[in-house]
Amino acid sequence: MHNIYMDNAATTFPKAPGVGAAVKNYIDNVGINVKRGTYSSAFSAGEVVLEVREMICRLFNFDNPDNVVFTMNITQSMNYLIKGILQAGDHCILSSMEHNAVMRPLSQLCSQRIEFSKVQCDRFGRLDVEDIKQHIKPNTKAVIMTHASNVCGTILPIYEIGKLCKAYNLNFIVDSAQTAGIYEIDFREMNADAVAFTGHKGLLGPQGIGGFVISNPLAKKMDSLICGGTGSASESEFQPDYLPDKFEPGTMNLPGIFGLHAALTYLMKTGIKSIRDEELRITQQFIEGILNMRGIRLAGLPGAQGRTAVVSIDFTKGDNGEVAYLLDKEYGIMTRCGLHCAPSAHKTLGTFPQGTVRFSFSHYNTIEEVKYAIDSIHKINKGL
Image 1 (cartoon, rainbow, N blue to C red):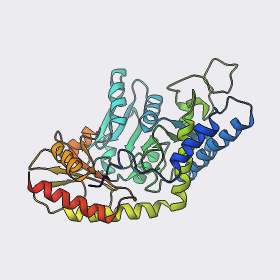
Image 2 (image 1 turned 120 degrees about the vertical axis):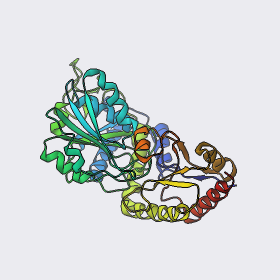
Image 3 (image 1 turned 90 degrees about the vertical axis):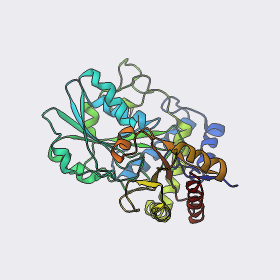
């Protein structure tokens, strides 16, 4: 029995070629900090950090690498943005498909007189931009949206939402966890004020490195969630107010940044469209193979159009947890079962509280593996 990894929405595996070597090279041969030392190796490491900022700018069509802020992951990025923007008396708007990286910080802020409204998506996870308008209030400060669902892969109309935010003078914050590195993201065309990203999913990098790209006007309005040493303005006991230092206290995850450098190099050489086309090709094959099976309900759209390579299945004749266990134990297929840190999305899709078995593909998966997965699902489903 061979093992097949189909849980790329959680974290991609394998990583891009060269990522592990880049992390090891930093630890074994570089090892120093940046913005602290005045020796040549510190400057050389700083050049790599700057290169990664510049690569992120190219990825998101942004023009200032100083406005690329590194964090641990997209959850930390969203906490920075949400808690830095919203103040007592403010209101924001989000979709019913949001991940708990958005929902939990906002729920926590309710005790500080901060309100939010959910725009209800349909049973396929689709959002009608016109529905946002009815939730706008005089105290609405921001719209915070995921680009695509981590449960069913449905893509939200981010560019249209950005136009609406510009028309109503609302800050627009985008969670790109499921789309960065797979779909083109144009910061300007999107009318975004900030785009949060993580390195370990579609960017094919290591865990523990993420960040956000932020506009100057929004950065000036925001408070820093964490303060501390930056290696700059050390004569002051106050956090610097310039970027990226304002939001980057403490020692960076330099092994992660070196790994992300290798991942982005591969990504740009291979091409986002090439990766996306391959992922959607195998996704379509998978959906066609399971769509008409009795006792199986597909959550989300019934085809590859309008989605990412994330497919969730509800086994109506049995327990989804048992199915995921059997897929792994009997067939070596690794998936993720449950509510995927997105209970609101599952309520929207009609799969709460039982959750789903989620298959999420990468361009490293093959048609042969997809056929094997379909056959395995058929065998398990017959026994339920």
